[in-house]
Length: 76
Ligand code: SF4
Image 1: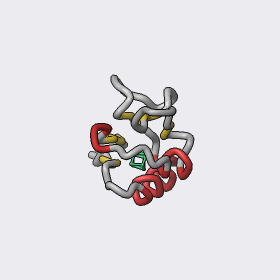
Image 2: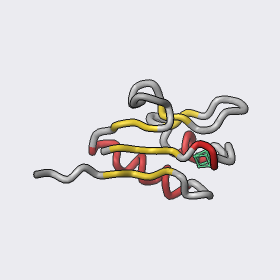
Image 3: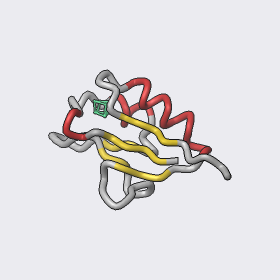
Image 4: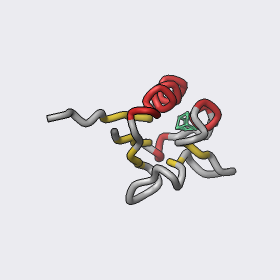
């Protein structure tokens, strides 16, 4: 599934990176990023397996400005 962070609206609160550090990283003074392990073509988006759904969903739920989105790929 795909994960996306609308970085321009990030308030740098750190909730996502403390809730799911495997997928989200917050560096001083910068908006949240997807960790290198899961990063896509840029650091605002990534691709993670179903095993990370709970982690990513908890992070999305913890975001006070609701800018983390999860797109589940439909099986054919
Ligand atoms: S929880 Fe949301 S606002 Fe907070 S650092 Fe993560 S993406 Fe940014």
